[in-house]
Length: 198
Image (cartoon, rainbow, N blue to C red; front, side):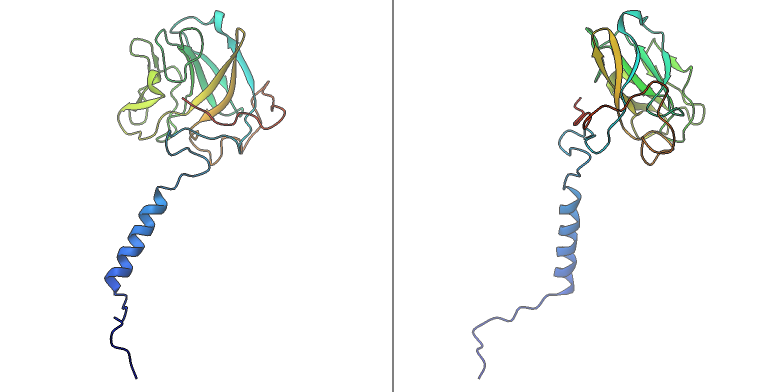
């Protein structure tokens, strides 16, 4: 004897596809353990960046960049006092920042291309990408779609210390692999910087 009062459930192909689509969309919004989805800031708890003293705040001249390598010897960067407050800037005026000088689009060298009149780095010699250093290295012109990797700075008295990197430096799978630490860079004792906030 069969009970006709219970409806039989049948999963159609359309219902299965909708369920799969909802699952894919839902998992794309799950925050990763490296980047905080709410703020977009990097959690460097897995990576212990070395600390490197790169200059004195009192010795910086507005608009004159200082070149240095960090975190590895082959990773060129610049430190500059902008004269205008900047995102993640340090110092009394929050205007001291540091960035990689490798364009994130195709690795073009941005050395010697700082423009103090607009607080920008560029144009890149490959595709003319230009980056606003007051706004976290956001691309403002041409092909690049990623921000310029920013070196996280800390002030120890008058010393400017590099303590991490936000963003992936061009040509790297991991900013700390594939070379030796920059001259003078020291691994901190313990777990290092945890969460970089802007």
